[in-house]
Image (cartoon, rainbow, N blue to C red; front, side, top):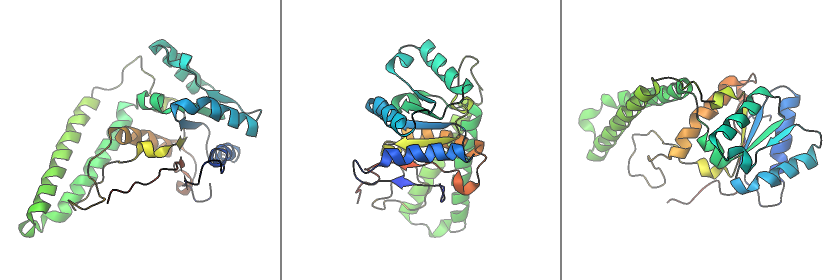
Amino acid sequence: MVEGRALLDHFVGSGKSLSVIIAGMESRRIGISRKNLYVVPNNMIQQWREEFKKAYPSANVLAVTERDFDSSLSRKRLFSRVATNEWDAVIVPHSQFDMLPISPEREAKTVKAQIQEMKDLLREGAENNRTKTRAEKRTTRQIENKIQKYKEKLKELSQGRKDDTIYFDDLGVDRLFVDEAHAYKALAIVTKMGNIAGISTRESQRAQASLPKSSSCRKRTTAPESSSRLPHRSQTHSANSL
């Protein structure tokens, strides 16, 4: 809470779950968050609910069940409850968090920022175009292709909202706590360096889809910038790709 960011990667049974539960409740108590969303593995929903109730018996916790997702109507009812009630915590499984759409306008802002980042990178290297190696020229083409891909995505997003859809940014969530966060790693890295062991320019669609949701939380929070980060919890926070 002091630093505004955290990765809890200590061993099983050492209190990672309790740490983020307390962090969420304290964030609400001191006013740096209003609605906390806990994203946990599908098979851990009940365990998280029990741990939450042990720590805070009177907390207003919504832990979703399989019945909440047995139809599209059930999902709409669930997310309407999330949006219209004051919850100390909402606990959802990874699978349903992934299915919850972000609004086109929020996603478009994220994509535009990524396009601008890539354009800036290309502009920096434009002056040295004549001295580029073959690998550097190939990397430049890859970045240009990715920019075109993202521009096509923007065209799709320009169609706007669907009237009967509840979007993530309609829920009022302003802080995310992600359990087993390594499931959302591998966001695309924009770099002019190619073929470097350990640096992959390939992107995970799951990570890309979660990026505008993270951005939505940061924009919504009333906390100082240093306190508006996204706490993650995982024992598998890094992988040996060298």
